[in-house]
Image 1 (cartoon, rainbow, N blue to C red):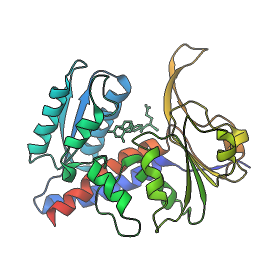
Image 2: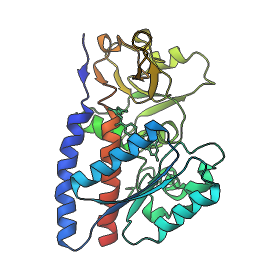
Image 3: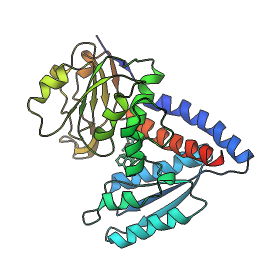
Image 4: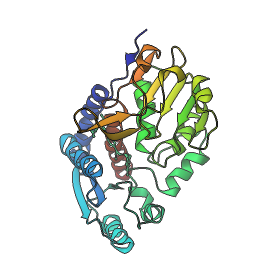
Length: 293
Ligand SMILES: Nc1nc2c(c(=O)[nH]1)N[C@@H](CN(C=O)c1ccc(C(=O)N[C@@H](CCC(=O)O)C(=O)O)cc1)CN2
């Protein structure tokens, strides 16, 4: 068996075309959605992700605003950038790129974001809504990568009701919140959240109908851990040095060979990453539409 591809790149392109139409309709009503970003420091990955977010905005007609701060920015500097975006009427939604450098308390920063402008769905109020609303519609923004996973599966018609899902990794942007989404009554999956303290990771993963590998640990999910016919989402990404060329290359959390066992597999790159970018745009457009009534 060779797994079918959950093509995030192609799906994201379709979603971006849909969003372009919605942005055009907003602009015709005199409303221009605007995404702000706060980037602290020179981490090449974070710089590339933020650059990609601004290119995506330009592609669909969303305006964008940058707050780029040096690596030695203080907690107060970062909080001041957040305050500027909270006050800026041209910014309808914004994100603080994570991780923040050591010495800056990310949770304190996230708490200062105006929840109505929280394009990442990471403010405690928006995460709290996710906890509280089990069956009711959630109109507040959802964290982009969890939303990306769900949207990708939905676009390929993969039903999760009654399925056992194993999430590997308990990070803020993916692992901790995806279980809340998957266990909503509209989805009805059963979730096991595993992490570095889990005993016998393989046994949990092996039980799962759907695996969400989001540990940021290259190749942590090996083919022998994948149940035949499972759906595998490779979310985590790491830059590792290729021993042959000495050059840095991207590696996902799922080791080579999983495609021979799984029924569906999201490639990495080209799977959940592009969908994460598309879901950020969707959060911005959703919130601009809500603000416009
Ligand atoms: N404030 C946030 N910080 C971070 C988030 C987030 O959702 N909000 N997620 C990640 C980084 N991230 C977006 O910020 C992100 C990661 C990966 C991709 C992506 O498209 N990856 C490509 C490969 C890219 C490459 O070549 O380097 C792919 O998977 O095809 C987009 C966004 C942590 N921080």
